[in-house]
Image (cartoon, rainbow, N blue to C red; front, side, top):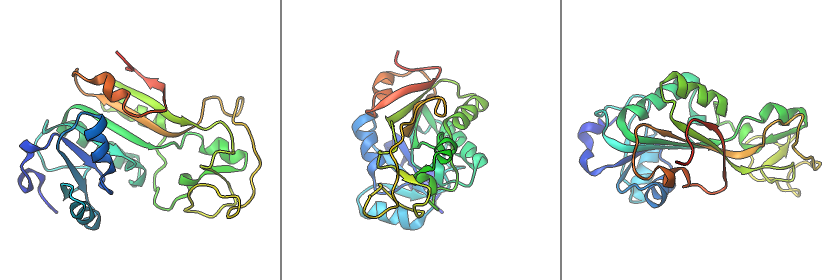
Length: 241
């Protein structure tokens, strides 16, 4: 496993992408978060090799305890990675690691799990809630609790892309097999159309959550919290300033 502090010139890096995939998060950070030179970090050597083959800087390392100096980069992106971790303790370690190495902000995005129990009582599930690879279903209230616990109280938490009823393609009947993607009526079991509304669903349901943690005041905060379209503010001490 590479030592980040010696394996690359950190003076050329201004942000990290925790959990490398195919480079989409690095592209998004450059395009919408004000990043210039990103470095992917993943403990899976095969994913690191794939990123490097696609032309992205990427190193093999443990995102829960990075061997690099504090305040090394402006920000850290964690997009659809926390749900692949073993549990809440590992999520805590990962956020702590990001807060230690970043100076300005942490950008977190992931699938929405808050409505799983209520959906199940109606015979439905989000397809991502039934993936073998999603080993931990982090809810927004668990994330908010962690941030307060870690002294990271300056954050804005959003729901992204509302889901009004069961006709949404991300919704499957409970009888659908595991590890599926968008619902297809010719492939998957039939499902009724049900509106997701109070009293069972007290809050709106979303496809994703987005959370931006501000580590210090910096120019460009408004651009960062507006970076993803389709977001609605749901919690936090900060929004637009």
